[in-house]
Image (cartoon, rainbow, N blue to C red; front, side, top):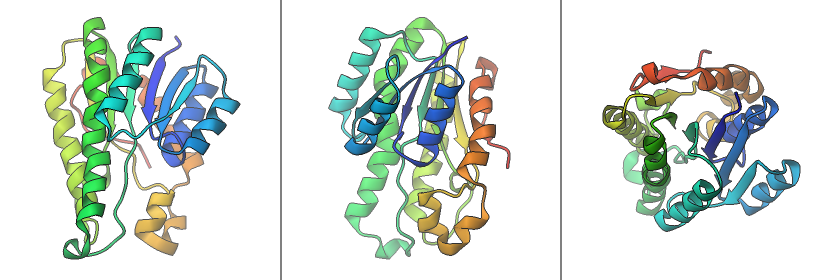
Length: 227
């Protein structure tokens, strides 16, 4: 069965890998990213019914307009994946500037809430659909010098589990820890050691099947992609 999948942060890393794998498996993908160049390349590579939009998820008005356009031309998503996120440059909390802290919170938490606000009502009306909010190992534990990122992902865990209690039968909201993957984000956090962790290519082979198999009985259950 072909699913309609809406995903944020599709320009690179895990978001791009998931997008390409979902399409390879025959599903329809609608996505967004802040990079206009990356969005242009995706639209050139993948024709309709796939469609990609240049969008900053921190703008509630722009997310609303995007969701309105998508929902006017499609059914509600079968799978909604909130993947877009930032990590702070490692530093003690007191050395992280207000602007960097605010931007991270705006993308990681408010961006997720904006997408939920404008897509989930249509999913509720249909009484079906799975919402996956990307968390992190740092949403269930902590490390020094990544306090803003930890705070944002702990927030995603709480937000998702609370959302799960609000959904009708037939739906699910799941906080997903992708594991430790060698991405640009990991390069920022781990430096040269990042190359020792799971590649994106290997990760996506496990992550996408897990996402596609999620069901209403998984509602509120914190999950982790197997290493």
